[in-house]
Length: 298
Image 1 (cartoon, rainbow, N blue to C red):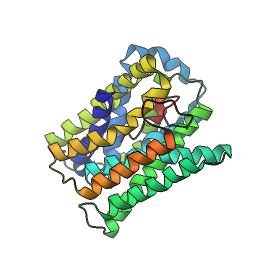
Image 2 (image 1 turned 60 degrees about the vertical axis):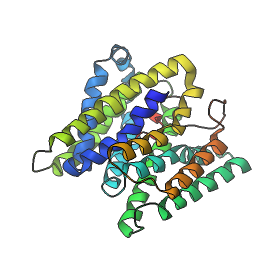
Image 3 (image 1 turned 90 degrees about the vertical axis):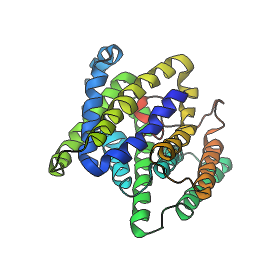
Image 4 (image 1 turned 180 degrees about the vertical axis):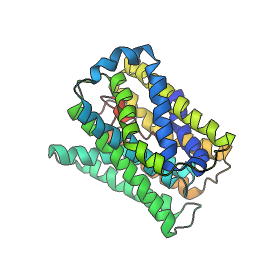
């Protein structure tokens, strides 16, 4: 669990380093292409690949909602935000999942979860209003892009649970990368960098595609098999911690009292909405059925 949280938390660091040189669309197109190739090299994924047949349209929806759209939004936002702030903002994914699942199923949100959702909104307000970054229109737009990416992740998890529950997790991991590549290809070609990216940016891209995507999914499969789909999603609580730590350690990003207070509010809201880590919860956590719903993974 700690290793998975560490490598997924590292994705925000790698994006922050690489996106100024590549641009959002080329960076993410390269990420999903390399990740798909690496996933195909895994025996478990190759065995599951035939399970993709007959799901083309639904995989295109999943690839857009769970990879192409949030990846591009997060990368664009990290041109203006720190990796630490981005990591904490994306921790709101389960909150969006709860709202979307309630709207989809028509179920009433309990008072406890409603209070948790309000606490999450307050946490985002504290993060933005008390962060080291000035609350300029550009910063607020980047925060909105991060939250839109979280909303897309939340929808993707519910969509996968309801429409792709019969597809093996390994096949979904591959299918969403391939579908995302289809969505990102033309925007990436249109915005390709005119000069060769520096070695530092290339190394960050490779780390993003290999460690934070392909290897992370392999670890995720391992956890699904060993501890099950109920406990695995609790990795959500650890990703913001690692994302903030990597940004502070390697990019020397400031960690203000406002970021700590805001992150605490967001994590407390997750506990109120989804239950405490390690306890079974009936709430619809995005990754409870499939890796199409990786929690707060950039």
